[in-house]
Length: 125
Image (tube, rainbow, N blue to C red):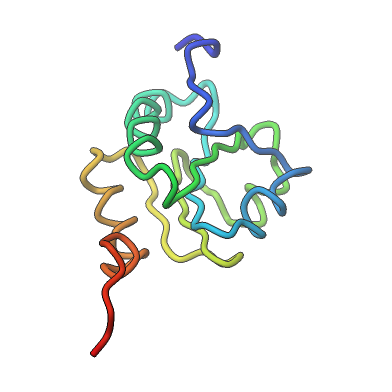
């Protein structure tokens, strides 16, 4: 896939801006750990893009090239790619290793966010 074709919804992040983009984010962040040479990573890229639009304003989507950011890959024990991790308040809430259909990612994100955050705010009795 041509790099120019990737939309700007999924933000490339590196070791320099990881803390500010992910750990200090005020919304949950889905991190896609990938590499350009990884077939399954390229396969799920359009899915991740679509999800980034679906969850716009609720979840931030970023991608990290493990070849260029080996310290981050080591820190989060990325042994195989693609690996998707959902961060909230600086901690990993969930992770999914391998390539999956959109429904699997959606399910994990929805579970991590919880029904209260995805639906309209409700008043508690």
